[in-house]
Length: 247
Ligand code: NAD
Image 1 (tube, rainbow, N blue to C red):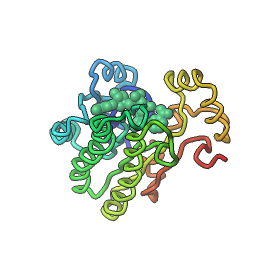
Image 2 (image 1 turned 45 degrees about the vertical axis):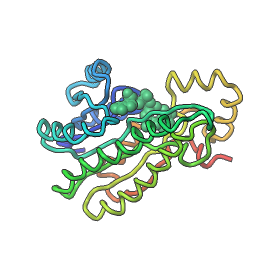
Image 3 (image 1 turned 180 degrees about the vertical axis):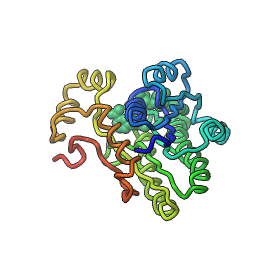
């Protein structure tokens, strides 16, 4: 992979975003991890090394997105890859979810993805090249209880991925999504271990029989960002041990 590529990974200070930034930096991609918690970002940056840069950005504060992109361009000169990874979830009974709860999830998971992509695409169009990767979820592929706003948001991501791909691919910008299945984190492990019935249900329909690792998502993002995927656009790639096709 070219050492001259520049990527933005939103929410790159932790979890899957960190794992994506880890693969990118290890492959010589200058990677800007963007998030709200500067202390957490700086800690991640120290772990990720010289190819990593931390920049504060709360993507839900939409008016800060155009100046954030301008700032990245003035410091790094180009943006080749955008990973829209930052996301929030909320587990509540359907009737307990307020309009404000619903809107908050949509602002971070959908509107911010649109607004940041729009600003980055304006730059990518000047070079007729670029790659956008949206992080979706299995919540877009089957019905999960108690996550109504999250499900709506991730289903919107899949639709936006396809709509962006058909409009932007003729102009050299590939747009794809990754749909992580059940991926290991301290939180997912605790959630499954505290609910044996749910755990049995998850693994009962996951042919590979175990959780994925964050690096599996990192590898998928690295592939989609690379020239190895130069004929791939508009796909939602499940990284789920077969969970989405499990019986
Ligand atoms: P996480 O909470 O560790 O990571 C989310 C990151 O986004 C955090 O660093 C958080 O600070 C950041 N973020 C949240 N709101 C933000 C905002 N307004 N501005 C900037 N940054 C913000 O969780 P994760 O599991 O690593 O999730 C990453 C993505 O993967 C999310 O989009 C999530 O929906 C998706 N996902 C995760 C899994 C899984 O199993 N871990 C499964 C399906 C989908």
